[in-house]
Every structure is written in structure tokens, then in C-alpha cells.
Amino acid sequence: MTTPTYTQAQLAAQPIGYWTREAARLVTDGLRTALAEEHLTQPHWWILNHIAATPGHWQRTTLTQKLAPYDDQNTDFTTVYDDLTTRGWLTETNATLTLTPAGEAGRLRAHDRNAKVHTRMRQGIDDAAYAHTINTLRHLVANLGGNGNLPD
Image (cartoon, rainbow, N blue to C red):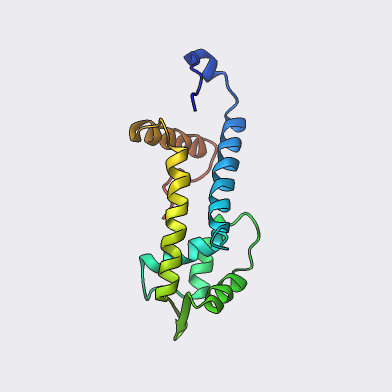
């Protein structure tokens, strides 16, 4: 795909709200579609990744508290934990969550699907341009009173 070139003045006159909303919608839709191929939602994905990153660390309550601010669909996290347990992807011992080998395999499959979305999204955008964009968005957020820090 070829993206047309515009002058700096033309680009600087563009409405940031439109472009950030459109980018967020397309990225989120792409990732959600990729995850749906594994019968997963974003909260499934978040849970799997957090547990994989710090095995033996998370309990339902603390992980839900960490993830809830990112959830835009009022997810019932209990249902997601129960689904992952029913699938045999997640176990709980003394309230601590652990991925099973099947859960790790599913997480890796979903990771591969998401990576394809990220690769497509970043076509023609080098790391420097991407980092500059993220930094600009961080400043916009901070200038408007939001948290410009990178997420944990």
C-alpha cells in the first residue's frame, strides 16, 4: 500500500482527534480479530501475558485491579479466568494463577497472530518514526492532564 505524501503544513492542520481515534479503532479491531481466531478476547490475552511474564505472582484480584483500567468493554474478569481454567489453560493453587502447557501454547499462537497485525501496522514505519509518534502522543496526553508515563 502506498500512502500519499503531504506537506508539513497540510499534516499540521489535520485534526489529531480524528487520526488517533481512527488509528486506535483499526489497531484494536485488528488485534481483536486476530485473538478471536483463538476464541480469545483482549482480557484473555492480557491475563495470559501477565501470568506468563511473572509466573507465581498473580492472583485474580490483583491481576484484575491491574488490568481493569485498560478494559473498555466492562469485562467480567471472573468469567475470563473461569473460561481459561475450563479450557485447561490456567490453574490456581493457593489462589495463585499459573499457565498450563496448553495455556502457554495458546498464548504463543495468539502472540503470533498479534505479531502479524503489528507487522502490518508498522509497514513503512521505522523504529525512530514509531518512537517519535509514541513520544508525541505521550506529550499530548500529558499536556491535557493525563498520564504521559509508559504503562507498567
